[in-house]
Amino acid sequence: MTEKKQLNPVLKLVLDIGPLVLFFAANSRFGIYVATGAFMAAILVALAVSYALTRHLAVMPLVTAVIVLVFGGLTLALHDELFIKLKPTLIYVLFGGTL
Image (cartoon, rainbow, N blue to C red; front, side, top):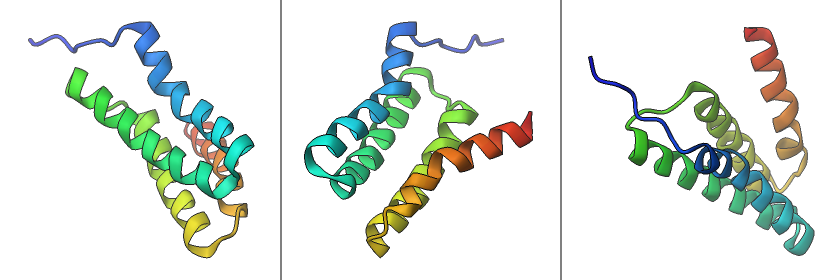
């Protein structure tokens, strides 16, 4: 059997938390719409790096990325910040319901 490659714990933390830190930093400096675009790009980069290093995607980051992309896209397309603000609530409801 082939063993799954594991990420270095520090790199895993950076890939998990990095996009969110970037979102908050961009939001405080440039506003919600620029921050949303940066968040969407950063989450895709984090998924790509994770996949490149391990050749598999974990379920939780993948579901989070889909929600960020859908609700971030709605935020940017409709110019309504409510959608990106709903993202954490939806993620918690989905994972809480799953548990």
